[in-house]
Image 1: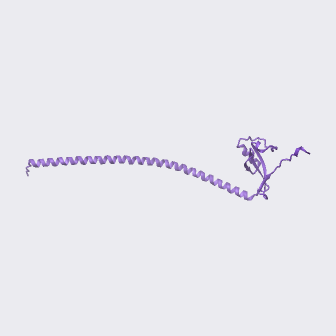
Image 2 (image 1 turned 90 degrees about the horizontal axis):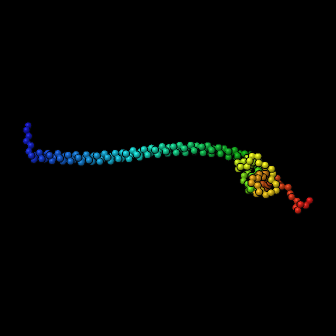
Image 3 (image 1 turned 180 degrees about the vertical axis):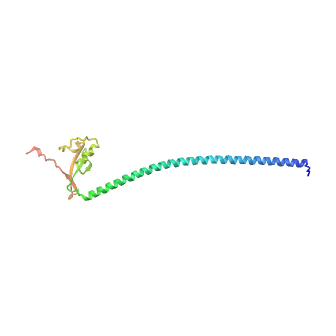
Length: 177
């Protein structure tokens, strides 16, 4: 079969081909733009994912440290609860009435109360008092003149108060005999 192609047909075919090329060029440009947007979004999402992974790793490390600190704190709390319970049982089992308690005075002001004089002396060692410090009973000078002074007191249940265990010797008035 022979087909005769006229000039008008050739011009239409050429115009259709040009329109198809233009359409292909526009479609290719739009596809390239879409691919570029897609790649930028992919890079942005990948960056966010990497930052999220790094943040998750940091948070995991912080959480592990916090859990470890919490465990240590819970153990300390448990030991303190046990010690408090022991001290409560000891306190309930013993009455302090009539017992001598030692009061550690710092320049005449009460610092701490101890069950024994030895505990008071040991505590002053933590405040810089040498272990071989002379702890003889203080003379009649006021307690404020001594940096550290240990005084013994006895609990009097009837008056719900304390009195000195050792009263200073009375000094004669006017040195009279």
